[in-house]
Length: 114
Length: 107
Image (cartoon, rainbow over all chains, first blue to last red; front, side):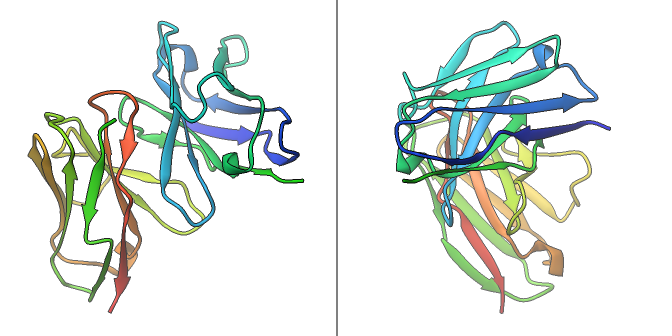
């Protein structure tokens, strides 16, 4: 089955770090354009980052310098390393596949709070 | 950054109605626009890409049109499962941005 499964969310204190994982099945992560999108509670969608098949990466200004997108080809998994977390990073984080995001995971909730 | 403004933000309609949601971009984005449907507690679902191309498996009552700065999503005959929140998204340039959403509720 072609799917994405995010893990790694949880409660973290401001200033802390967390790494999200997005495990893919049924296709190869490294051959695809893969993105992270987040949604704060009760709010709209916010694009966070993208990694191209060639390895190029882009970030939203709100996370640039704090978040890093990467992938492990041997594990067919996408990652989002989140450092210096702030309360405003609290959201459900989704990974998505494709230039138009045609496949999404179920999301993982990150709560930044003391 | 390219801003996307959806109208209306809230829409109340009945089963069988024809509804149109508009998305306006702050600058031209050619046809690099997608539409998503999201239901509570669920991930968004791609409906339309490249402004007017229906994603595989999406019912034909959904259609998209437009280019440049003005785009529309039309549902020709609302079904009960269509009541959800709809977002437009531009993929013309970084940062990728979404509209604020249109919540479609049952009248």
